[in-house]
Amino acid sequence: MSKYFDNFPTITYGGVEVRDITRRKKFLQNNLNNPFVFLPYTIKDNYRPEDIAYYYYGSVDYTWLVLLPNNIVDPYTQWPLSDDNFDKMLMTKYAEKSGTTGYGVIDWAQDETRTDNIVYYYKEV
Image 1 (spheres, rainbow, N blue to C red):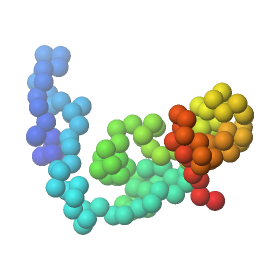
Image 2 (image 1 turned 30 degrees about the horizontal axis):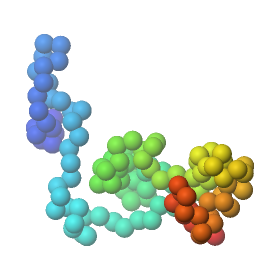
Image 3 (image 1 turned 120 degrees about the vertical axis):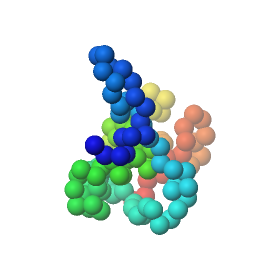
């Protein structure tokens, strides 16, 4: 067994003492400030953590190396949305407030003078 798991606490499960591997270990704080520990990467549209792991490490088995330092527990809700999915989310969330539908909501959200209950949304073209 890997020595990594030696630091996890033990629990009793079904009458047997086992390691509690459900605990999430944290990256050391000094690693977060070390520029030599991380590789810079700007997420491209529609890229998933698996794509980035494959690009950098040659295998999707290392997806956890992308998620863990970025403090992402649930990649389905915490990973950045694609442009299309972000637009759909905006249209759904603000359709009633804007009084429009479809891409009219996006135009409403991009209005720089808008200050009521919406953070100005800007999409580079």
